[in-house]
Image (cartoon, rainbow, N blue to C red; front, side):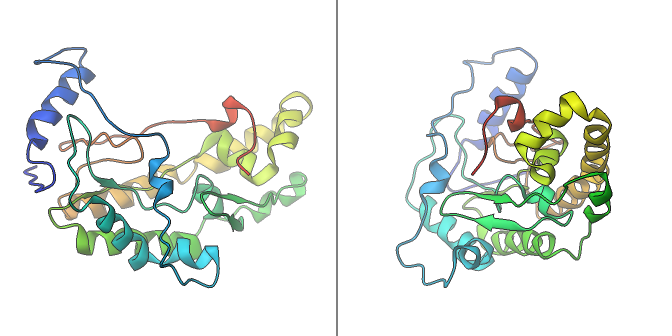
Length: 240
């Protein structure tokens, strides 16, 4: 894959350093990234006139343009890359199975939908889901304007225990681990059933637009795929 970014002219050599790092090797030095944790959430625009926070999060053109404005005139040193990750929050994957999202200024979460085994039928994956369709729009809007300015990645996907916690509620899921492991296993089964379907769709879309495989960790893979398995649930606490 041939990629040229006016904002990152040394992209090729940077990717060579990253590839060597994957293989526990060094070309000239180890990869280095300069990035403040969660800095992307500081992009709130004072000029936003959206009626609600949900409207702002869901506005595809606004979000893409806001990111483009944020990278103009900046220099990206070492293995730091301008990457836009379309984002509706860490519970997006739970939401596309039927949960409702609540949006705050810098994050979002889902209201639990599972009170007992009788509620498992509420978990319904659908590409007609409002959040699924909007994520596609968020991605496509960015692809329309990224040109040689920034990369577009795929969104943060949290199957597994994070998804189960969103559906059930973190405290109840912790109790379930001791008292109702059968329910936990069912939630995990539902949470992973469509992961590859979603991943493959976005990988194909981004590859068609000559984008590397990249997501929230901002490590681009020009030829191949990358995914970062994660489980925030294992760290404890609540996302609210």
